[in-house]
Figure 1: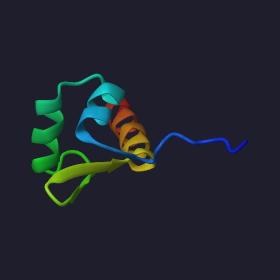
Figure 2: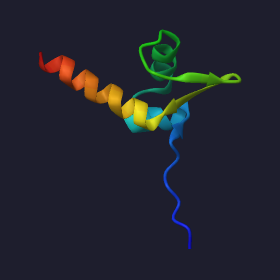
Figure 3: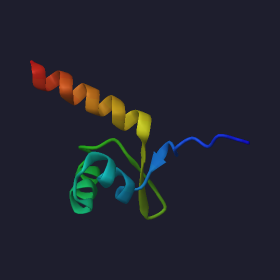
Length: 64
């Protein structure tokens, strides 16, 4: 049996659930380059490892 990992790329909907934010907020922040993401066709994709690093950086900058 092959173990399946969670996908490393997330859609706006998946990221919204992950960050517990509204989809419209994710879309707005992605458009404004406040969130690290990229477009595939007309849809946005977010790499989970990059989002996790972004969260860590935000935590560190808020502690200063």
